[in-house]
Structures are given as C-alpha cells and as structure tokens.
Amino acid sequence: MMGRALLVAAAVLIGLLPPAAAEPPVIRVAVVQNQPEVALAIHGRFRITPLRTPDALQEGARLPKVAVRAAREGIAIGGQVLPQPGVRVEPARDATINLNGRRLRGTLEILAQPDQTLLVINHVGLEEYLQGVLSKEAPFHWPIEALKALAIAARTYTVFQQLSKTSLAYDVSADVLSQVYGGRSAERGRSTRAVGITRGLVLTFEGKVFPAFYHSTCGGLTEEASVMGPFDLAPLKGGVACSFCVESPFYRWQRRLSGADVAWAVKQAGRGSVWPRQEVEILAYSPTGRVGQVRIRGGGRVVDVAGYEFRKWFGFDRVRSTGFAILREPDGVILQGRGWGHGVGLCQWGAAALARRGLSAKEILAYYYPEAELVRLGEHTMEPIPVKKEARPRS
Image (tube, rainbow, N blue to C red; front, side, top):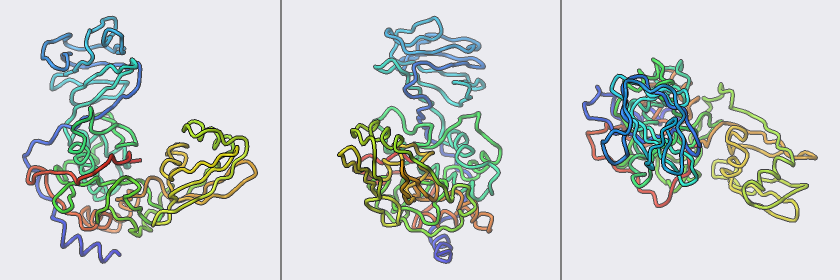
C-alpha cells in the first residue's frame, strides 16, 4: 500500500511551488448561531454600517466591550437600537475585533433572525481563515509535513464549500460540523508557517475541487465517502489501510449508554418512546465494517437509525465514531469503539506518524487521497465536483 502511494505521489502530484500573487477568496464563517446576545469590542478605529449601504450608523476610535442582541426593531448595540435587520462591522486595517472573548480578523456581519437570535458571520480571507483553523484541528507541535498536508486538505475542503454554497448566508461554520475555527486568538507560529508554505494549493480530481474530508483517527481503515454524501470518486474511496494512527489516544475507546440515555436520545430525535427497556443491535455495516444502521427495540416500538445519526443523537464526542461493537448489559449497552470521526479521507494522527517516518506532505496526501492532483488557486478555473444533494456536516 505504501509503495502504491509513493508511485501516485510521483506520477500525479506536483511539487510545492512558491506562493502565487493571486488574491485569495473571502470565506464567510458562521462564528455565532442561535444566540440571543454576544459581547463585542473593537480595539482601534471602526465603522458600523447597514448591510447594503456605506452610511455609518456608528463609528469611533474604539468600541469598549458592549452587549449586542436582536431586538424587535432591529439590532441593539448597548443602549442604542439600530433599526436594521443586519449590520456590518468594519475595523480599520490595524484594528482587531473581539467577539465573545475571541479575536478575529476581517469584518463581521451581524444578522437578527426571526426568533430574535443572532447569526454572526466573519468575512475573512482564505489564508487568514486557515491560520485560525489549523492549530484547532491539529496540535501545532506536530511535524511540519503533517501540518502542511492538513493545511492543503483544509483549504480544499473550504474552497469546495465556498464554491458550492453561493445561495446560502455562509460557507462554513466555526465548529466540528465544518472546521473548528478560533480566529486570530488560535493562531500559532508553526501552524501559520504551514499555511504560508502551502499558500493557494488545493486538491482536485479530474479538474474539479472536491470536499477533502479529514478526521482525527481512522482506527485502522478509512471509510467510504458515501457516509458523508453522494461522493463516488477515487480520492474519497474508503478502505485505505492505516495502522499509523495507533498512537492516537482515540484509537480505542469505550462508552456506556444506559437505558435512560437511549430512551432520552430516541425521544429527543422525535422518534417516540422506547422506555422502559430496550434492545440495541447493529442492523447493517458499511463496506469497510463500520456501523451502517442500528436498530432499537423498546416500548412496543422498533426504531432504525443510520450509524451517523446514532452518533449525532448521543453527541460526536461521546460516540466518537461508527467503528464500534455493542455489548449488552442489564440496563443499557457498552460500545467498544475505534477511532474518532467519520473516517473519510485523511487520518490526522496517521498523517503525523507518516511525517515522522519521513514522508512529505504531497506523499501523505497521495496516500489518503489517491489519484488527486495538487494545483494552485488562480492558475486554474475552480469548479466543485457536482453534488446533487447536500453533503453531511464534516464531524
């Protein structure tokens, strides 16, 4: 398997070139969703304008920390209510936005939602966005070649989302459902260096950019991309053997779910009551041996749920992957699992181990995304792989 990867790397992937001068795209990041109030401060000069006009509603040399909330009349900033459904916060070039204690680059859009909550979108350049992602997605002390590989995968995923979501208010969220984003507060020197070295480089397949999914720990074998959406292309085919992530603390895990846990999760999902006693069993497996479907019996009801949704019901941190077996207990079950994440694409802990063995970023990418090509933004017309329906979130 490793020999095949090295041949693909030599035959398919181009080398890392000097940074291009092309202006990177601006990414729309949903940094706050469904919150009634946020804390905003700006260190330096700023302007607050309506979304569709340049007329200043408020401006100054700095904005001390103030509460921003949705109001019936518009958006309230401290004691001032602006009769606008949304506003743009524009700091001067040398100023910094502080939102809920997190420093951000770029500008903000603050939108009042019909339920009087806020949607806050950070507009930030692609490379600056990745600087705030990389150290949140992987330890900044990892080998630089692993960080470079992850930077390219994350950039590819981001560009795909940006090209695919032109009709939506934002391209990505700031959490595990897209990519964890910490803004300027999360930037670290080595992570920023990896982003800079790989500036503008993305992966394509047959001339089109694709969602270069990645995950923490595959647990021995990567997964088919069909679990994430209608993706049937060579770079996202599952079944890539990966014993390299064995050093991950998440390579093996165990979780107990009580009968009350199961009943609560089923009810919260709107699937009725399976109280007081349930049987939980695996109904089907994916082609790579992960759980494809789970059946829950209880209260005279039979509930079937896809493996991905089963994780979502209990929390992605609690049920860390669909690579698990079920052991029955008198009151509940024990999940004996392997890996963390959906298992599609690049295994982060595996990439770190391969880098320690001397593999370069392009060799690591060739191993986890076979038949992908490395190109630079601005040198090719970027188009996304066509997708007939929405892909699942990344977690």
